[in-house]
Length: 213
Image 1: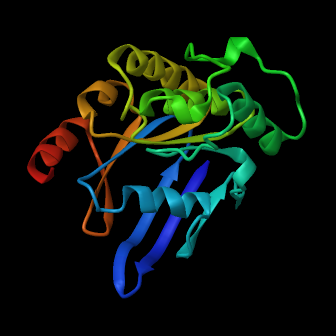
Image 2 (image 1 turned 180 degrees about the vertical axis):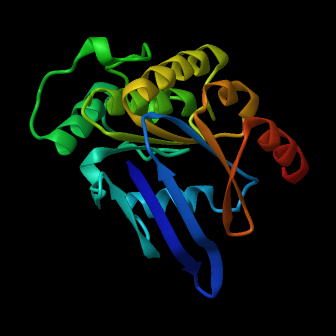
């Protein structure tokens, strides 16, 4: 079970999140929606321990630890003078210890492994990062922040199918503006607006999303 309790998250004198209580009891895909600047990424940063806040995040009644979480930001930072292959292995090594073997069966996207990252397009850089994440199979929780941004239609479809599979055995938290595409696969959905996080039915979320975005 994942328990997210954020009594307050402030930046300078502004309250970003307040009285957030989310209990996730089983594996599945959980969607977080809201217009830009309402705190979706901040919520994820709190869960990840990237920022200070009042509250706690527990996984199976213990403090959630970073090695248990796969974090996929909207625009991942990559070392641009590495090749795609070098970055994937670098990520794998720092995440799980020295392992010089790349598993080709865990490459979701077909990329030029010997290409310098600096020469890659924005979409390809995202594919490199996603391929790096998916080399590791023992994460308990996956957090995707606008994962479909920057990818072509075919790649988005491949990623969506993979996220569906992840949701069968893991907790997956995801934010996206492509709400109609992912809504059918969500176990629960939440709307973030003016510091609050409200659980919605899928039908009510669509109405609320149309009114607030």
